[in-house]
Every structure is written in C-alpha cells, then in structure tokens.
Image (cartoon, rainbow, N blue to C red):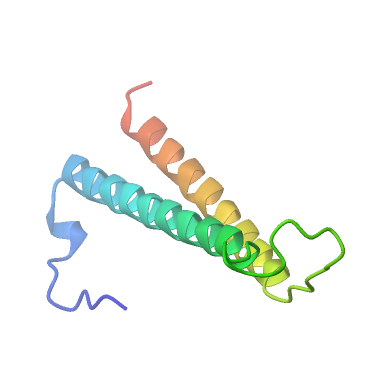
Length: 100
C-alpha cells in the first residue's frame, strides 16, 4: 500500500496540473492491472499443461480437475471490470479538461 502522507495536496496545484497528475495515476493503475491480467493468463496456461516428460502427454483418457481456474477467471473478470471503470474515469477526466 502506498503512503501519500508526504505528498503535497492537490488543492495547492493548478487545476491543469492536478488533472494531469490524476490522469497519470489512472494510466499507471491501468498498466498495473494489465500486468496482473498477463500474470493470471500465464498462470492459467501453465497450470493446465503437463510437463513434456510426463506419462500423460498426448493421452486423451485423463481428465484433470482444476480448482484454480475458476478463481483465476473470477480474478480476471474483476480486474477487467476495474480496467474498464478506470478507462471510463480517464475518459471523463480528459473530457472535463477539454474546453467545450
């Protein structure tokens, strides 16, 4: 968790500067979500694949019950929803900043 106790208040900055800082933070959060989604995707694909030296490679008679995939899928869906909302917030902020 980040500690913003030492950060200067946004009220002391020009409106344009504070919007730019907020937009930069939103973009940073979106980038972190993208990284998390890639990590989840990598974990989902690596968990379901057997090792090459395994006896079950190529076998069609073995079914693996995976209890992690639903959790990964739920986490991925939640992160996608967060990314969408942050994208909307960034869009609203940029529309607010442009003169009408």
